[in-house]
Length: 124
Image: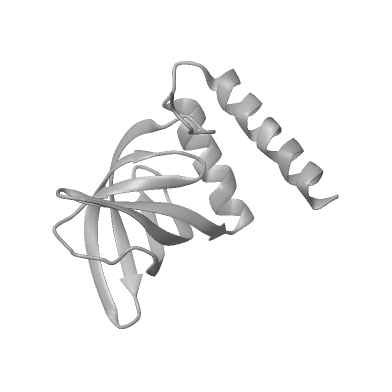
């Protein structure tokens, strides 16, 4: 049984990863509201924190979606990140990317609503 709380969508775009004084690019394979999988040959240790930028082309001006993420999964073909922080604009762009690339956009909204409800309940 899957423990995922958020749906993943296939989304093929380049991402730039910055870790300390190191920067590289990779191909985003999939995204969710809480993370992504990046196809790359770069070797990163679990727990490493990275600044992640995805540039959405085809718009004028181009839109940059920025995240702070932590490496939570290492595979032969890439790295899985869990998003730790993002600004409100990036959150809205990510929500729209997921909604437009999934068969059931209403499901995404339900997942977000449920997650917010859980967050408020745990803060009490």
